[in-house]
Image (tube, rainbow, N blue to C red; front, side):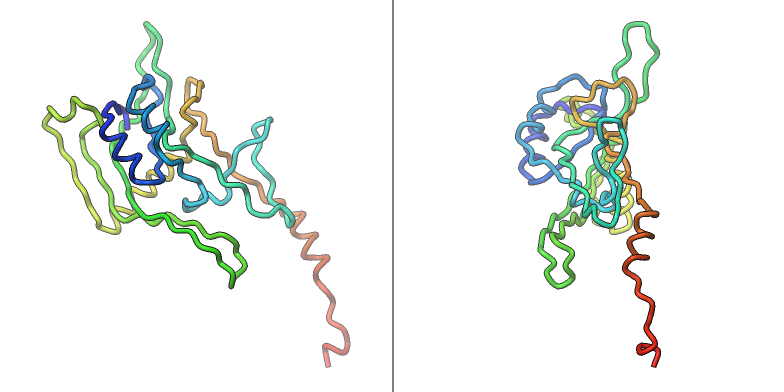
Length: 212
């Protein structure tokens, strides 16, 4: 969302439960953004499809290593508000690209313990409807001639959801000070050699008895 100044929208989003809104990095610290950041319930990456192998980097900027004994990666608290894009240009500098997308995906979060398959805690976000339109989330937009659409069409909902997942991967914490895009989450690396060694050790040659 490029411009977010409407406190009523922030209050409505904060009342929905877990949420994560990505706003353009060029926005100043507007009241509505601050309100949602303070009152919204943060969304955990554990609910999101395809985030199982994304994590925070270490002090050197490297992602975690997945090996036979590493266990599941710790989920990341994405916060109710994140930023993406470029900082506002200084005086005399050329304009920088905006995060100009104006859309929303709503859904249901579920949590349960998978005792039968020993998969541990299962957390899921299931998208159910989407909004898209021309309007920014500003007070001024109420006075404009704008376009908006709600849809529960599964294909459209999923397409918008996948787009927003990509945007979350691209995003940064609200307090990010970098000038250009610097995604916070980094992918994990699988240690294939460690897995090979592990399964080699676990493998037992069949005995003559087993062969009959």
